[in-house]
Length: 271
Image (cartoon, rainbow, N blue to C red; front, side):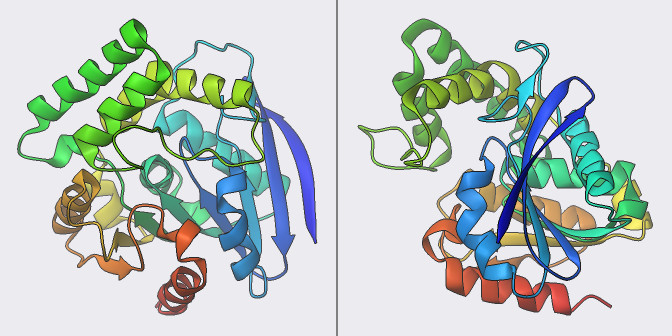
């Protein structure tokens, strides 16, 4: 059974969902909403109390200031508020894409709240040797959104990073979301989330010295993607070998059963 909740915290009304029973596992996306983690949440709910949420400014999580930037640090604070709301002192955290960046900020700033962090394909572009060029690419995508609109921006995004559908379409929207919501989610992503997320520099010293077990996840089919390179770079900084998960960047959506099996194994390996 899934229960749906709303939480007021730090300038945002967070939409979150809870499934299952057992140790708490939080699935975190950015800009991916709770709906996109539904299948994985169902697959993990037999062993865990699984918490999913819409990150601030996305879908059902409404910020008081619609033009406030969504930083990894703010989103990490939101996850802490969710843990408080469900009565969890600690949790395992799976973060994918921008949600993995949220997880890295969470583990560095609130290490006492995280047992294991699985950071799946974090777009930590600042760790790449061509970080200046990557920063310019991100700026160019944002400007494309301002000049040409959402479809052109998603096409530029996919061309730059290799993530998404074909050259003529944006990423496939979840059927549960209205066109208006998808447009607003895209606005938030391009204007207020993409830059703060990709420009986050993980606190490697804190992560290496802290108690959180950090697992770097990468898609088995993700070699053409920029997030493969960032995952390898992150693993090298942390001194860990990336763990392969089935599929590509959103393997948890289209390869859910196999993906959940690897996630279970990784979480059970906690020392």
